Length: 526
Image 1 (tube, rainbow, N blue to C red):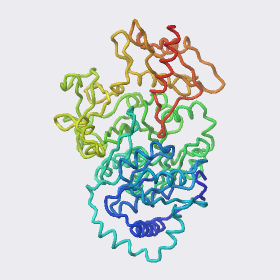
Image 2: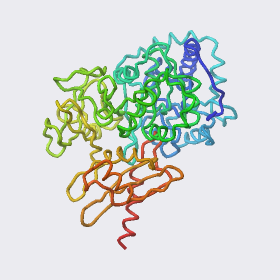
Image 3: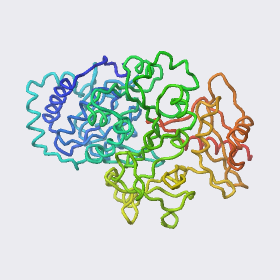
Image 4: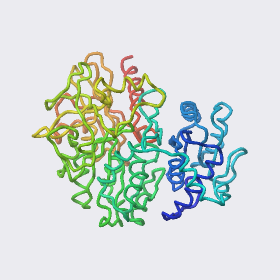
């Protein structure tokens, strides 16, 4: 409905037939191995058809969020020299086909715009009509053989959502995807015949690994969902009875605080939920296990190839799983996770490049192995600075060694995502994870409030549960008295919001919050 197309259910044979027809169509348009196709679609079966056809022809897919507009799209097309774009007549209320078609005047590489839907603008190919015209889909096998793709060829170029002014392209080969995605399929315990519900947009590691690649690896059934709508998501769980799904921590927290939303769901089938992209709370993991018998897996990954799966098999205790990840890639420790033995990890002090081997010292995670990408798309300078002298990727994520045997990693935050108050480093993720358990907190993010004396003070940006009011005093009292955290970590400022700003893949945009805080701090000083 989000793109005006009816719901479709395809068998594996249906998929094979449509993929073959798409292969013939794209080949007849003159697209050849290593040409780039931009794909801007909501989660749908159509994405699967496009991705698989491109894989067979050796074409490179560059998927982009549905929220991208002319500014971002022009950058991606120019950066990749994309020769074609696949989209829908509309996604939601926005006319995407018309928008992309208008870019051709300023994007000389863009030769073809193909779209699903009716009432397409002039010059845009009607994909449904063109696929129906293909009368000899058997030609697809010949074109696939001519492409002679290898497992080390680039399959996708995804785009980071970091703090840079322009997104960075992250190319990934088939082999890189397979190794990374196997960890997801194994963590979800997916086998042939299982069903998985995919709510993450299929444009990056979270979406592609947990739906498209997991589907291929397990021979399961995928139920697509996008954009995220909680009521529809829950109804799909009731109707489709998936064995596995995933959701952001904030969504899982909210469901536990409003248990009436989960009425009618049979948890006999849904036994595992994946979560990540933000810290998980012990309370949430324990409640899902104790109330519903559902294990929440704590997944830490990135487009570039970071892969630390915190599963119930490796970390059974909820309190440990919320706070720690397996110390994979270090001699002396053995784990069930499929990436065990395939990647090497270490912690490094970025200021000295000295390796950190003792517990309790926060340092940057470095990783090497087949999950890691080979470098940013057409950006040799960025690539050079992204890897250290020993070939490890510098993740930009701070961890520390933890556990009674030093067997775990604990995430401490991004290198640039710390509040430094009077010389004391405060992990924002730690505070956010704690505050997610507060009964009046719906969403929370912590940022630094500029201070002339202390350097920074902790500011809690909170969207309260609807119908409630929250004050700084009660937040501080709860953290101090219930959670008993150190006094220097307690919030000293509170900014209340209706909702927190998020990027197209659901991550909180902290720079917007910092900008708001900067304005408030300047007003307070004047």
